Length: 226
Ligand SMILES: CC(C)(COP(=O)(O)OP(=O)(O)OC[C@H]1O[C@@H](n2cnc3c(N)ncnc32)[C@H](O)[C@@H]1OP(=O)(O)O)[C@@H](O)C(=O)NCCC(=O)NCCS
Image (cartoon, rainbow, N blue to C red):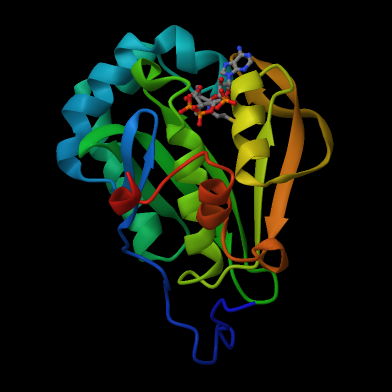
C-alpha cells in the first residue's frame, strides 16, 4: 500500500491534505471526466441542471426545508458554495465539481472527514440526467477514491444508498465498493425515514488503484489511449 501516512492531529499531519486538487481526466462513454474544486461561478449551470432535474434528483436526496425552487435557484448556490469552501478549508470536506469535456456536470463530495485514528469520510454524488448511463459517476467515484487513499491520506470511505437506487448501486459495484450492511430507517430522504445499504472500501483494497481497475475492466480509458 503506497498511500501517505500522517502522524496525527498533533504531529506532522497537514491541516487538509489532498485539498485543493484537480483529478483526471478519465475517458468514458459520455466524454472526458475530471474533478476540480467547486467554484462560485458554477452557480448558473448548477441551478439550471438541478431545477430541470428535480424529478431525477429529489427522490434520492436528504430532505431539506424550503421548496426545491428555493433550494436550487441561482441564489441558493453562493451560500452553499461558501459553506462547502469553509468546510474544505477546515479539512472536513473535499467538495469537487464533476466536469465532462470541461463543462460542469454534477458534484462529488467527500464529507465528514475525520482524521486521527479513524481517517474516514463518506462519499456522495449526483450527475446531470443528460449524461445518465454514460459512466460519469463511476469514473468520478474511482478518481475520488484513489485521491482519498493517496494524497488525502484517508483509510476508509463509506457510501450509503437506498435499495431502490439501482443506478447508484451499480456505480458503487462497478467502482469496487463492498456491501457491508443494511441501515434501517437511516436517513430522511424525500420526506420519510429510508433504509440504506452501506458500502465501504479501505486503503488495503486499493491494489493498483480504482481508476486503474476501471481501465483494466474496459469501463474507462486514459485520454491518450482513445
Ligand atoms: C446515481 C447517478 C449518480 C449515476 O450517474 P451516472 O453517471 O449515470 O452513472 P454511470 O453511468 O457511471 O453508471 C450507472 C449505471 O447504472 C445503470 N442504470 C441506470 N439506471 C438503471 C436502471 N433503472 N436499472 C438498471 N441499471 C440502471 C446504468 O446502465 C449504468 O450501468 P452500466 O455502465 O453497467 O450500463 C445518477 O443517476 C444520479 O445523479 N442520480 C440522482 C442522485 C443520486 O442518486 N445520487 C446518489 C445517491 S446515493
